[in-house]
Every structure is written in C-alpha cells, then in structure tokens.
Length: 129
Image 1 (cartoon, rainbow, N blue to C red):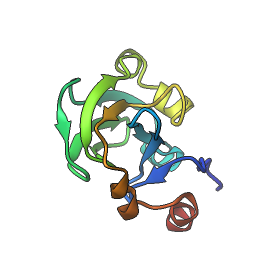
Image 2: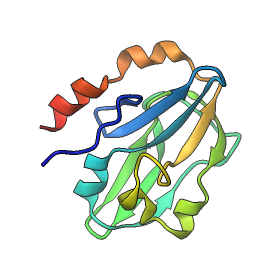
Image 3: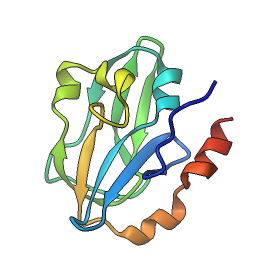
C-alpha cells in the first residue's frame, strides 16, 4: 500500500511529522497517514496545553483508536502555541486528513538543527515499506 508522504515534512520513526515555517520560526506537528491507517478509527486525542514546553522525542500526548492507545512523541523541541481544538471534537480528522485538517499542535521557539535527527520524506518512505 502506498501512503501520502508530503515532501515538506520531517518525520520521526514513531510516525509523527513536523512541517516547519522557517519565516515564522514555528512548526506544525501531526501523525502520518501510515500511523492513522495502522491505528484505525481514531476516537480520542490528548495533547499538551498552549504554553507547555516540549522536548524533542518526549511524550507529547496520546491518541486512542478502536484498536489501540498510542503515545505521541515530539519531533522537535519548542513551546506549544496552538492546539488544534477541532481534533478533540472530531478526532476522525486525523484519519481523514492527517497532514491538513488533522494536524495536532503548533510549536514556536523551535531549533531547526533538530531536523538533523529526523527522517527526510524518502527515508521515512523506506522505513514504512
């Protein structure tokens, strides 16, 4: 099966993605199409609060599906500036549009050098094959 793997994202081996806005110094975080497919229908999401400081690869929250409960990990360090409240009311957005309407949160004060430890799209694609 082939999964959408946007070229403008970096990936953790645990299937989270980060899309960086270099001008703003922010990053939007979510889970990959592969992850949501493996989880099945997502029914619940738990995320940090705006203002929380997050360390790269630290526990970021939880996503619960009809199959399993999965921890989420931070692809980058930063401070949470925004949480996608829509996924609390409609967690199925993660299944329907994981790189768009199903994003999870936004970080500021990110360290772009941390992307060195993340997978480029082609590396992530090889990992999930």
